[in-house]
Image (cartoon, rainbow, N blue to C red; front, side, top):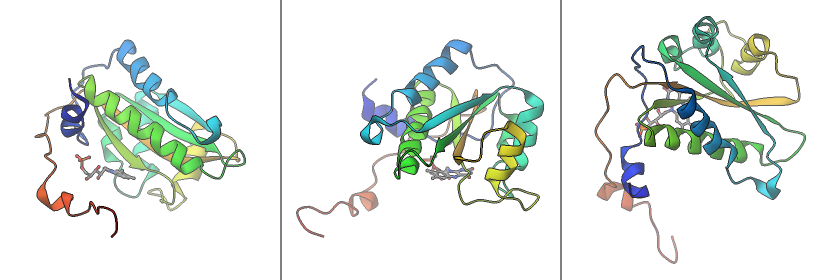
Length: 174
Ligand SMILES: Cc1cc2nc3c(=O)[nH]c(=O)nc-3n(C[C@H](O)[C@H](O)[C@H](O)COP(=O)(O)O)c2cc1C
């Protein structure tokens, strides 16, 4: 499929069936993340893949709201980065997230970005501290976000590049 058509079809999917994502498709999604561009090719990120249902349920409380879909997810990928390696770790991590999200969509796997950085857990700790305690990543690793994954319960309509959006494009000068 044409890349632009694929981008129109990419949507945030928050409801999943009980069907398993195949290991092959999960590997493709992770590969898309690992192939991401990275400032000075430092690649400061690490990815934590969770498939354990009990852990996924606990991860739903990593946010005060906006992460409930993890209770029904089939997998999640947590993107963290060593902030001591580069000052563009958030940009680097965002590209990993975006590439995995788009790859998932191309395979018919539903996914949603769950913001982690600068957010709080249901219990009041930061989302980062909550997930650090649950998943055991070291202090120098900062949390960017979690990608929830599952086979979509329903597929929303593709988006069009609406006229409104084109107003955001400025040519030559603002
Ligand atoms: C930086 C970022 C943070 C987001 N955080 C959340 C979140 O915490 N929870 C959630 O349900 N969706 C989250 N989303 C998904 C957006 O809500 C979604 O992309 C937006 O509503 C547009 O819908 P679409 O992705 O279907 O085009 C986030 C997306 C981005 C890019």
